[in-house]
Amino acid sequence: MTARLLEFVAAMTRLASEGPLAEAQLLERAAPLMRALVAQDDWLPEAMTASHPQYYQQHLLYGDPLDRFSLVSFVWGPGQKTPVHDHTVWGIIGMLRGAECGQRYARSADGRLVAQGDEVTLRPGDLDIVSPEVGDIHVVRNAFDDRVSISIHLYGGNIGRIARHVFVPQTGEIKAFVSGYSNALVPNLWARDKA
Image (cartoon, rainbow, N blue to C red; front, side):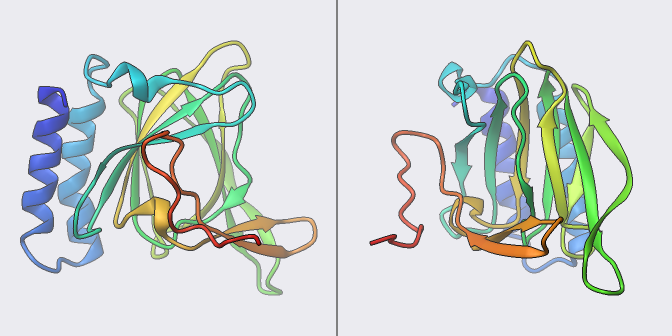
């Protein structure tokens, strides 16, 4: 683990150990840590930058042993994007390399999902926040069709084992999923058995 990454993990562990904080207070104190982490692109282990030709990759960088937080590198191949999804916990997204675009969604009065605001582009050093309290549903895509982009995500739990949702805005269909991680050494132990 590089010194910069180790310093971030130590600082987040100290923050998480202070006891229960209100979400707004925790985000306010964690955001500068994340901003400092993504301020320079010289610390991410090469293995955590690997892209896949078809699917974006979610590499676990650190998982708190008490599941209070997790840190993940999202590696976006050219033109890759997520479905519309939620997180069910707070998250801070920091752009490290390239750029990504995000479009938020909200439920209308009749329960449909509708785009909320304009699409936002994150560039290196930029942060975005998601949570059930401030807006938790979005779709994200690599801003580039010809190169890889990498963002670093901090979540208020072990995001690879949290039950979340994918939404189909056109039909209103909702599907549960557990993402797991792309790392070969971190199997998705929490996915439901399809057998």
